Length: 327
Image (cartoon, rainbow, N blue to C red):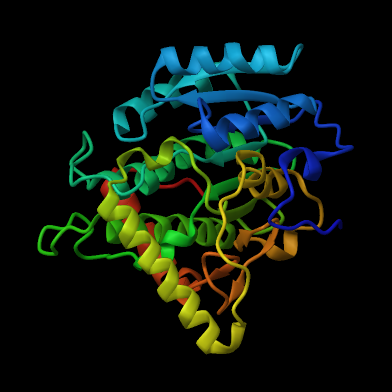
């Protein structure tokens, strides 16, 4: 298996692959990492369902992708992850016309939003980033399991290091709201969900990974204020200090990735061979995450590999979305 790093791009990791016949669905594919993933996969022959929160955004993205990849096979789909009825409506319609597909990339997300609730009354970041993807994956799971080498790739983030999931006060009913804590909870939830999905399905049925893409400037940062940016830089400095104190060394200074490099790990996870032994893993820089290393590089915190918390989050998620996961 080839070795890649933080600077590898989508075209690097997909070079030489023929993905003809692979059927891929990507949330948040109208811009940023999702759109780059759609472009790169379609350019290698995959057919891609481009999901966005509005029909206008989805169709516009497909039009742009058709210009970037002449002859590429992309189709639009509309799903608002902050509205469970939208997820149910999309999956009902899509499943009426499709029996199976192969890869789901849970790419969409919101970050550091002001306090608000989703349509269904969940804190926006937890509701959108985790619960929306949980329900979407649950409803599509039967079709995925009928696919060829099925995989689910769920974006987490170094932001998971800010906070573990809260299985009691997920809505900040009694906890003072903090935008970064809420984001951290949702990103920890993404990693725990990917891990529990892998455990329940087993590597012979489905591969599931969570991914840290690295720092990329995209629309994800549209809610960031100067204060939130300063808080983020302080958190990163503290994490780097902690990693060095733990013997991980000073590492490289933080730098932003290009969108092409940021999307590389998720398309690598969606296509690379030889990953069954990493099922359920947290991936970064096109490789397995490193326990104890700085999360802003390729490290992760211990709570996202806590199988007991993963199981309890799964059970809570089924209760909150009022639907059992069929796996």
